[in-house]
Image (spheres, one colour):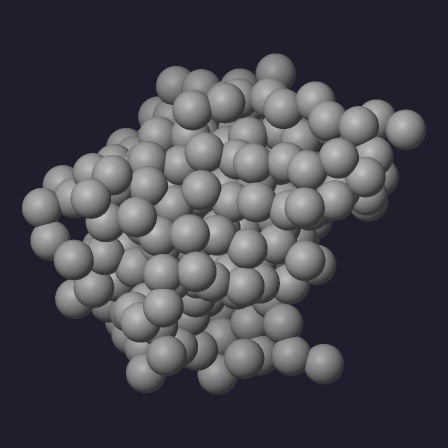
Length: 114
Length: 113
């Protein structure tokens, strides 16, 4: 079955540590996205990539970094510079030919930093 | 720049009653409009979308939405809800020529027996 996988589902880290969240898709989609979800704030775009080896900052990129070395993979690193990293992180992908907003989402990773 | 406002953060409703979730948007250009549903601790699933054509859009699970350009609204409705419709619903907008989604804050629907 095609889809998006995010691992792990729950992640715990100590303050000051960098942590990398995994996102893999086998939908053959060119575009991939990372969102952060906080209660009552909807989803906010962190980074997105429309093609391999290229990515752009979203609305809240500070304290985060990404790479896009393979079409299937778009890992997100939450660095120690992110002031409030505890949140639910969602990865999504879309196909440019059909894009017009139809993004497919993974199950999410809940990150807790103490 | 575009923005989306979901006017209700929570909507309690009894099983088999109708429900309407309100969504207003602002944009200086043409837009595409979407409703997504999120069940607890899961990702988002597309319910329906408006790209062009008929302003009444039908989606999965018996939901429908109506695009009103003059009022810049895209309200979601279901005539009779089930317990399984308990979830959070997100309205989203993208520019017709763009490639990013802007989401509203979400509306949490709690269906009571």
